[in-house]
Length: 94
Picture 1 (cartoon, helix red, strand yellow):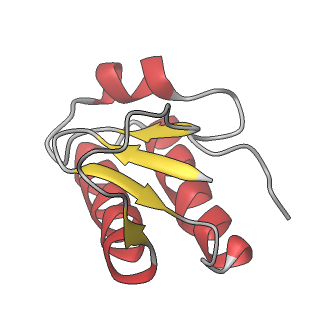
Picture 2 (cartoon, one colour):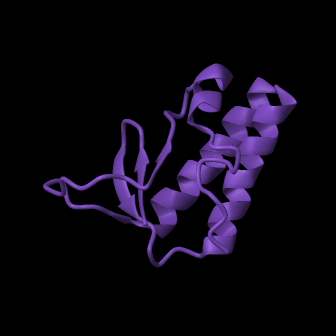
């Protein structure tokens, strides 16, 4: 599974703990639903940090698509809502 973090590149999440990834994704979705800007930024920062720490960066010359997109760190709630699928950024994988 290839995840794009907008402005940061693509990451291969094939060996990432699916349950943990889903938990962080669900936190972002819940924060967006709450309408709390600070909670959204904090949850998004945790999701992004998890991907940075757990996934492998995809080679710069890789031209394939991303399976999922995670927004910029400073994205506004309206921008984030556009990327949510109803199952977060990442549909349930577990």
